[in-house]
Image 1 (cartoon, helix red, strand yellow):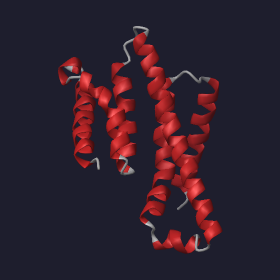
Image 2: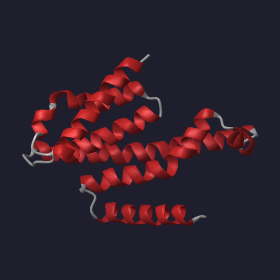
Image 3: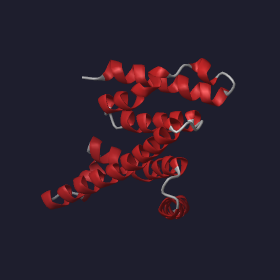
Image 4: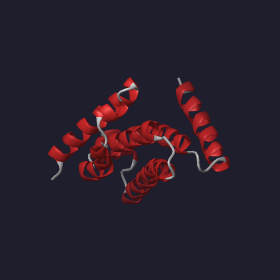
Length: 163
């Protein structure tokens, strides 16, 4: 059934157009990163693992080079979306806006993406800003408290797996 892929492609088209029309919406860029990750991660993971189906499809050197280039371009799109979300949240926070929950959610999402790609050093770098956060900073918001706790737990995991 191709319907889930069609729905994801339609969603991505809408998110990309919305990002074009409102380029300073940090939550939109976070959502775009999530959608791009959903679309591209299975293929990137398969290529990284060297799944036989991927290897057979890309049997010749030229095909393998194209597959690597495609994976790198897809990865760049995901990272660019998450970085843009974090940059916009940082600017909003420094201007005095209360964007802590959204900023922390974008940080966790980006950190998860990098950790799932076994880039523990990069994930720890992204998540390191969470050291300033404490669960009590979000005590009135259970969802935010969980985001902070999950991000700090992931940071500890990544730090143990560096190297």
